Image 1 (cartoon, protein in one colour):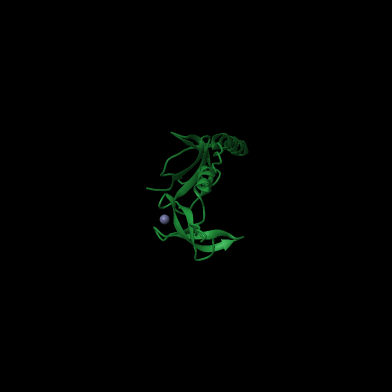
Image 2 (cartoon, rainbow, N blue to C red):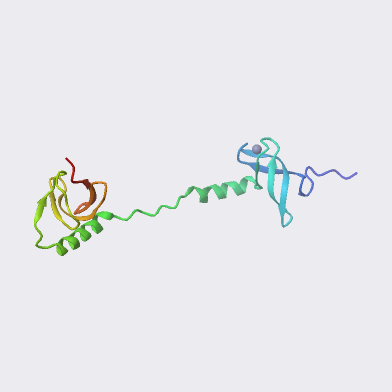
Length: 147
Ligand SMILES: [Zn+2]
């Protein structure tokens, strides 16, 4: 009498030893689907979870490559903002400098002098009493025309 193998050749609905990441070990699974005579998806008999078939060796190699997240280094905006500010300043050359106050009403392309941020050019006047101002340090949103 030939001995029965511990596991039959894999077939859909058959048993197979596979790694379950939930149960954290190799346990008996039921083959759910096959690709190229190899089990593709399996169901864990312990937790009843469906997952791709893998052995311990596979999972280790895969978890390493997955841990790295794509991290595009954020571009430094400060230099660009400064260049843009200089450009806008050149365009508004000769314009009178208006001291900034939230009570004042400003127009697009007015050149203002802000106590904290310095000289800035108004890029956009919004309907909600807000102005977008380009300062050397970058764009700021301020209020105007209140009070
Ligand atoms: Zn499991």
